[in-house]
Image (cartoon, rainbow, N blue to C red; front, side, top):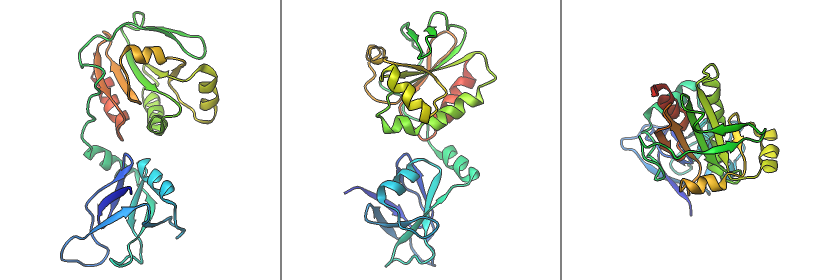
Length: 242
């Protein structure tokens, strides 16, 4: 059984898990611990009970939090999923440690050259990209954490829209038709490189998503797997490049 161990009070959803110290809704001399799992009673703000798959996905998105319901008691632990404010989300992200480096690259190494074409036929040659910051996302459609981080990656592109020296490439394992169909309903602002399984294998990538930032000399300055604040740390890497 999937279980999340929570201390009563304000509970935050981080990367598919919820864990934070909180204050009980009624006075208490000591913190109590309660196990929250797929059998827990979790409601929406209208009081309707939510299935585990729904509320756990909401928490994993990073835009919601779990809090005690008004009728909460230790004997009747009922929770409510509510939206986080922008300030709460920013504070949550700021508290997070940096993501661990991926096992597929080394910081400071020159990335092996590549030459690829996106779904519109535009060529991207790493040699011709020297002098630009190159941001790579290795992903595939059937990967839940890959899909989950797309909105944050889109915001990253938007944040750098005025910079002509930053290029965003999504290196997809899926073929062109599948990518085109997917992005019609799920916009993804990176240039999409379809059918790039061989490229991922060339770099030894076996876990997805894998995000990489190359400096203007083509050297790796950031590389990591999925992380709730992946876009924030990638922006720092982009800003830190010369």
